[in-house]
Length: 418
Image (cartoon, rainbow, N blue to C red; front, side, top):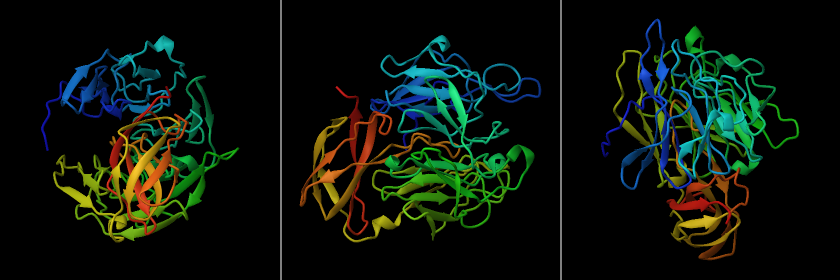
């Protein structure tokens, strides 16, 4: 671990990986809660460069933000919405904001299509393959939005339409949601959640939706194994499955250490070894380039912070000799054919985004299939042309063999066409 001083209190900021691999961090804690003023969010924004471990300040956002969501678009710009503003009284931020990645600056609000609506705190807002945004219904604290609880949002026209079928819509506070792998299928899952402000018992219901359908609607999937839970972390893994881990049955109490794997190919759950450490609020998962999952954090009701880190070794690490990618390009353009030198009997390849997770939310997480041809050690892969399916930036390139074993990832940066 390398300790890096932060220039301001970035607690409860929003963050996302930019097309060039740097990290945009917006907002944080301007003022802690008081009975008269509530919480207030920062307008400050910084770009962190992992090559130098330094922060560079950008221009301020148009509103203060505490618990905002930052979602990368197909053109590399960053959409931002939700969170609490810097106005007195814990008011929600009602403007939509846009970060221009080319100029590293926030646009004036007048240049961004506005809905003038409050999306909540850390709303789970995903980029779909057609360029629109999808709000799954998962969020952090507070009331659910009115209507069906889930929405399709055209940010270019500032139009919002309800999506039907979501069960337990008022029990999706601190739920987990994910764009199921592969991203080409445009299937989303929401799992667990509660209503912490009202003290409601959490749910273990799981719903899935296929946004490629003409009239998409949520439908039930098998429940989360074990009791109802909130603070559940969902993590896309390299073999196109999703790890669900940890959570709690109450407000920062009743830790759950159980873990299970969801297979989108047949919508089934498989129980796997539990985390040795029970984790609830402020816990998170990170998929590592070597295929393991790092699980850390927890902030129980007593105010303590869990400092132990767990490492989960998924089943794909135990399926014989792992394949390898011995050579691959460091960069690729959309639509480009790239050459991969490999070992093993390769069955498929994919690109997985680096994680940037907080509060059970990583709306930029996705695994995109990379079609491959050829036999033997040399394979040809074609990068998709759809920038909304594969937003520009760094990805972890992995291959899967015929036994389900996964390679260690190699980094590749996908750029804009031209």
